[in-house]
Image (cartoon, rainbow, N blue to C red; front, side, top):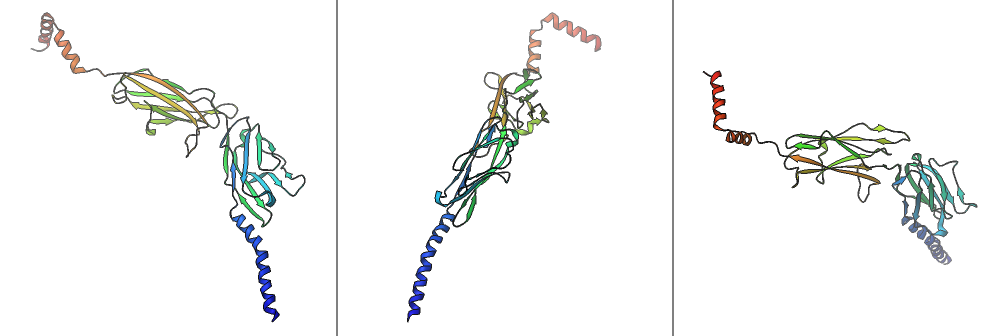
Length: 288
């Protein structure tokens, strides 16, 4: 008669011991890790990286930061001191917070560019979750606005307008976009030339615009507003902003093409009778 009672208590004890494990497993399932880091940082400045997680302090085992899948910092709560650092960090001087959730990269150089991520590990159950990598790029912004050069500043409707836009040196190399009267120019009308390299790993770029001037291009005042944007990065993704942008705007005068028919009519109308007789006499010498 005692065996059923013993079996009953075994089930109760198993349930009691299983509840914490179930609770921990539930915590693991809801464990979130997010790395907050800037996508762009200026050469020589400081980048702050935060490993934001939902693990309670009593369940936390360790936090690790990685760059390009190589560990650059490790925090282990149970150790004293809890910090384990690598021999060096490429392209920056590393500073860390006491709780291991934040690192700062001081005086960043171009070598600090790369994919950063972090991982957080629980004590019970032993479970690790990682954040999605963030691509951080160290940039050297443009020092001046781009320059625009034309073959001439006055164009007749029907002519082909050509202009070159050149950015100032920067890293990475900027991208040039042309606009006419505030509207982006069709990329088929733009030719991008090879980059020109400068000292300190900087590069500049030039893009040529070639477009036929039409009456539709000109504004009410007979001018074209030609603008050139030089940007880093070249393309934007959702909710992103340019890390660096410089603009140049110039006005080009557009004049109507001469009306040959109207000019001939005016000339004939202004000729006097003696002048017309002289012309007819001259023609008679050649035409019998």
